[in-house]
Amino acid sequence: MFGSIGMPELIIIFVIALIIFGPRKLPELGRSLGKSIAEFKKASNELKSTLEEEIRMEEQRSTIEASKAATPAPAPAAAIPHEETVPVRKVDQSA
Image (tube, rainbow, N blue to C red; front, side, top):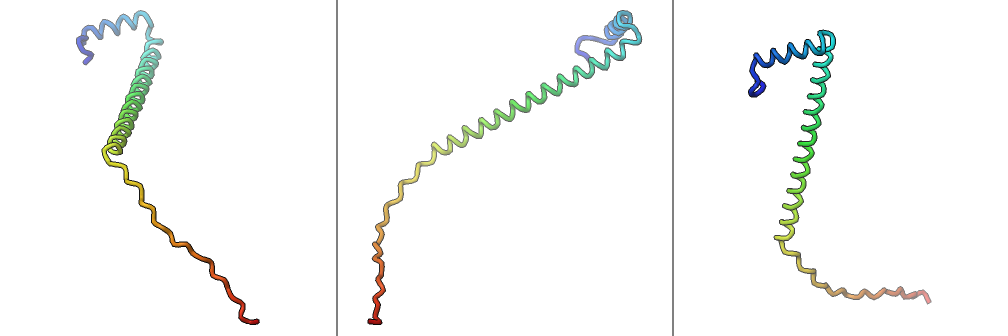
């Protein structure tokens, strides 16, 4: 259950804690210890997920950079000559 600590050892630890802290203080101590362990687990899980997310994002960046380096850059487009457009003048034929 707790590694190398067996049931007799747990009972001895519980009896010593009961003698030291008393029956009124022991439940409060247990609750606060449980809350502390839960907060520690939550913080460690958040840290783990943050690290995994950063690693995943870094892998994506390196994959994108590798794919950009592998594909050749497109050649510049050749200039297409433009025909010059000459503005058309309207001729006044009423005169």
